[in-house]
Every structure is written in C-alpha cells, then in structure tokens.
Image (cartoon, rainbow, N blue to C red; front, side, top):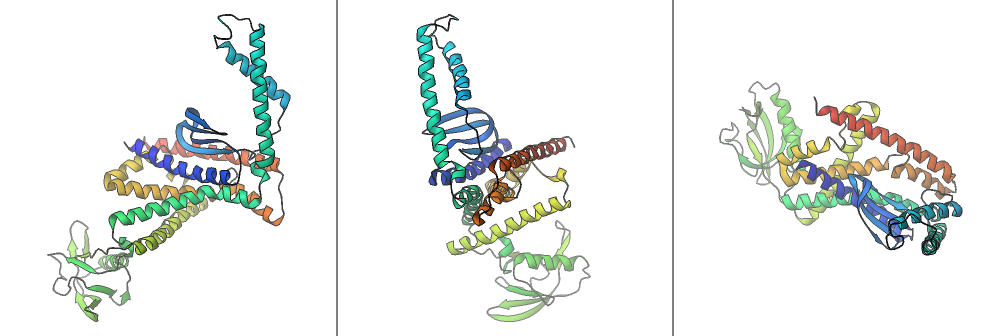
Length: 399
C-alpha cells in the first residue's frame, strides 16, 4: 500500500510542477510537443492539437517538452530520408497496401510513400517555422523566466493549500504556536492544588514563554537535574498575574518530571488558518534549507538521504502512525523539497536554467549551444547522483 501512496503523492507533485511550466508556456504562445508524467517508455498517450499528453512506465519525475528550448539544426534532406524509411516500415505492415509480398516497387506502394512523405514534410516545415517564430528562445527574458519559475511556484502554492487543508481539518492551532493555557490537570499531578483550568502560564522560574513548546522545553530542562525543588510559575488568571510555586510529577511513561497538565486546544478561524499556513510554510522551508546546507557542508552524509526506493518505507511508517494527516504532511514536505531543489543553480534544473536567463535582463547573452552543453553535463551529474542515492536506498533494506 505504501508504494501506491508514494506513487500517488509523487505523481500529483510532479503533475503540478509540470503543469506550471505547461500552462505558462502555452500562455506565452510557446509550442509544447509533449506533457509527460513519469519517465521511460510510454504506457499511455493522447494527442490534442500540437501536444502529446503521456504517462510513462517509471513513476519518477516528468517533463514538458517546450519547442525551441534545445537548439537544433534542421536538415530537410536527412529528415526526408529518415521519414521515408519509417513510412516504408509502416507500409510493410499494412496488408491493404502490400498483400503478403515483399515487392515494394509497385506503383500503389510508391505513390503512398510519396503522399505520406509530402504530408510529413509539410507538417515538419510548419513545426520548424513555428519554432522559429514562437520557440522558447525567441521569447523575452521575462517570459522565459516566468515559465522556468512556474513549476517551483506551483509546488509552493500546492504546499500552502495543503497546509491550509490540514489546519482546516484539525481546526486547532498547531502545538508549536499554541498559547500555554491549561486545558486539563492530571489526577496525579502535584501541581493540581495550585493550578486551574484556563490558567495561562507566562513564565517558568523567571523565564518568559510564549507557546506550549517553549513551556515543555523549559520543564524538560529543569527535569534533567530536578531535586524536588519548587518551580515558580507566573500565571495569568482571571486577568490578574499571580505566582505559584509547584512541584513536578514523575511520569513513568515519559521517564521525566512533568507539570502533569495538558494544553487547552485553541480553535482557529479562517483568517488565522491562512496566516498560520504561511507561518508553517516558512518553518518547513527553513527546515529544508537547513537540510540542504548540512548536505553541502558535509554535516549529513550522502547515504543518509532518502530517494525513490527508500521513500515508500517512510510513507508506510508515517501512514501507520498518522493516517491521512501524515500523508498530507509528507506531501507538503516533498513539495517544498522539490521546489527548493529545483531552484538550486545546477545545470539542467530550473535554477540552473534561470542563471542563464537572468543576465539577459541586463543585456548579457550566452551562446545557446554552449548553454545546452552545460545543461547536458548537469543532466549527467544528476543521473549519477540519483544512481548513488538509489544505491544507498537499496543497501538500507539489507541492514
């Protein structure tokens, strides 16, 4: 089941990313020859106008083939020769033209080859003319910048929408940003005589706190060397600030000394959910950036990374612990991760292509053939990197 969940999550993320490129390319009039989800041989395809929409056998990645993005030297004579060979092979398999014979010199056969070739040449010449007029590199730097950044933008927007959905389903403030208000006092808590439900804890031992996580961290720090001393709590009760001295209670399950209280869940309205979606997005964004930074600086080894082979295991564990909510969180994390990774200035990635577009705003142009060679090197690097990550993924299953 975890494999299906993984394929669905990655499929949706890749689809939205490529949809961003596709929609903006179409908006600026760039010809798009294919919109593909997955890699490898096609298992399904349908043509609509100039574009082929396809699903490929490997559910990893995807692409939008925008005409004119890769410089090409069109050779009409070479095209005719290759197309003629292709048409002959097609006709050999059509019994209506050749009925169980190897003779390809008959007049009907030659006329059909000529007719199909003329049609193919006309179509290709129209395509080449369209590329010369509307291809990727014929457009302004602004148009190309928007098309390149659109995929990442879609990843970030989808992550924000998913965060809003998550907050709307739960209907409460995330624990990290929940105000430290007492919602319940445990029966065995040694602080039950001093605390009341709806007490807002402002400070612990003179140190101010603003949310439940900060409060938990302060108590955890005190618990490490706790000698049954009083813990001073500054409390807001009925709009009045008071100070209570309480004892911590040892919790066998947590194996730590705690206050013995539970948080008062705080319901959110739509405005708070929208605002909190951006706050959580910022937190996840920073978390991902920190991960990339540690990887680049060597603080995290390459073998610690998780690739497509190891991801189903993580997805399965998350689903077992948190169900749909956990899958939504994984969707958010991967969306932000893919967005940030695509912004890295590595040739072949969106970020790598952007570093060649941005100088054009200032009148600096790079030879397109040289640029494509650089992107080809980047593609080889990424393929090698993916193979290394997959290798480490596989070895983890045997540890």
